[in-house]
Length: 67
Image 1 (tube, rainbow, N blue to C red):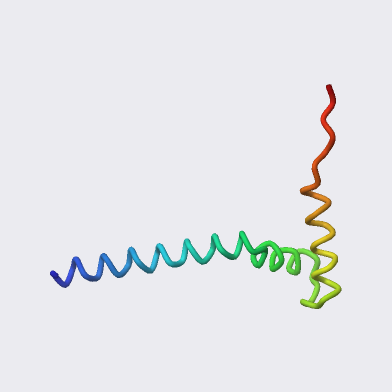
Image 2: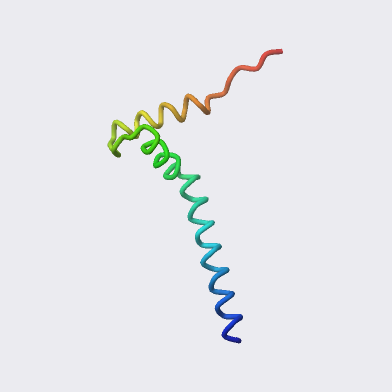
């Protein structure tokens, strides 16, 4: 494998890994929780996580449809 090709392949793999990890953080609520802590200027704690979950569930609750 050529040196330039090898470096490009490594950069692509690292980019894929970053995107994959970011997606996993979103899926498993790590990134939204971090944004919640930053927005509310709160330290991470069981109480803060409970408040985050309540807010998250309230935002994503199904609203009844009319007609």
